[in-house]
Amino acid sequence: MTPLDRLRLEKAAADCGFEMTAVPYQDGLELRSARFPETVLVRVAGEKSFEVMASDPAILDQKAGSASLNVEGYGELYALLRTTAAHARTKPNRVADEFKKKTAAMPKTTEAERLVVQRVGQGLFRGALLDYWQGKCCVTGLDVPELLRASHIRPWAQCETDEQRLDVFNGLLLAPHLDALFDAGLMTFDTAGVAELSPKITAERRAAMGLDGKMKISDLRSGHHTYLEFHRKQVWGNPPLIQA
Image (cartoon, rainbow, N blue to C red; front, side, top):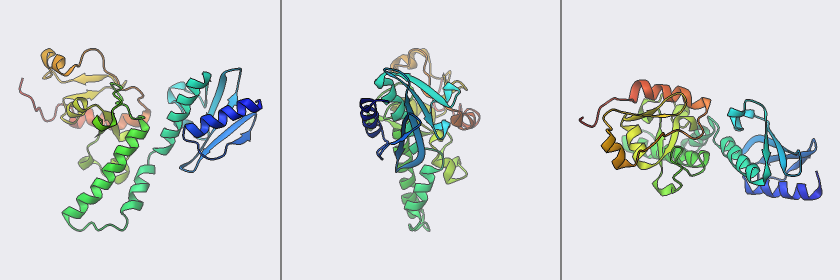
């Protein structure tokens, strides 16, 4: 690793969410953040190629099936580091722990007080989904945060614990029309993340909503599967809100 390589990697780290000083380690740099305990090791493997490993492989792209990833060019490296940092910031229980800290001293006796507490949780959940999906609808790629909806897969009221309610894997960041369909049980996703629409959404209705072509969740992870199974069994098609 040359001094120029190190300088470029340090800038990439700072730009992508690893704000602490990088530490030289095994012919590369160990990247760190004060916002999460996981670390990421980046090694220079060639002129513009890099090997990336994480102390917790789960925050890397699980589709790779290995503990490390090889990327070509700084563009790919930046994209991977941003995604990895977002996944680390929103790991399961991390959002729930923040919620408990924020609401520990808040009264919860009356219904109005409980609604205030719930709004705190929903705000944290939305922030986590915007971070995890990097401000884009996970199906369409729409990148206008003001329009996006933090959609629970297993509905808030049907979750058994705060950990379920605030688990980033229990959420999808969706464009408004997809959120409405999903919440109403008129759309769900199969085990591969491919959208299934209710027969009540006829061809004419699909065209009116711009639902042409195959729709798929862009980065489905194993953590989503249990929640999506619940949605398919308990929410999908129940209740029918549109008369055929």
